[in-house]
Image (cartoon, rainbow, N blue to C red; front, side, top):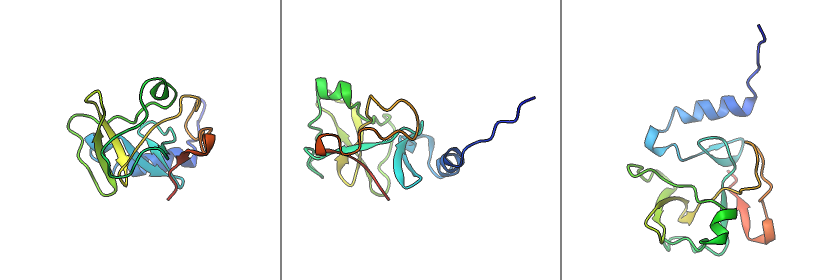
Length: 125
């Protein structure tokens, strides 16, 4: 039988996940960065205006930068809020800025979209 060691990042994610209710697990912090419930790095977009309640990433932008969607029963918590997208979907926001993933990030811990075109950024704690 092989014993598989769980990386420190995975342990941190599991510990932090227990502090959120199931509906609020869309985003959480780990290793100094914000990630989604599967450990993928989360980004903000400089063209989004904090507190506007809107996402400016639509169409082809949304294909490259998928929105971090909230479930219908998700509740804002602390610096996490929810914005309504143009299509009516609910998207997580941090300090009023909508949150996204980067389609080129292939595995948890990747952050290839950080500073992409100087307008996409990871969220650091």
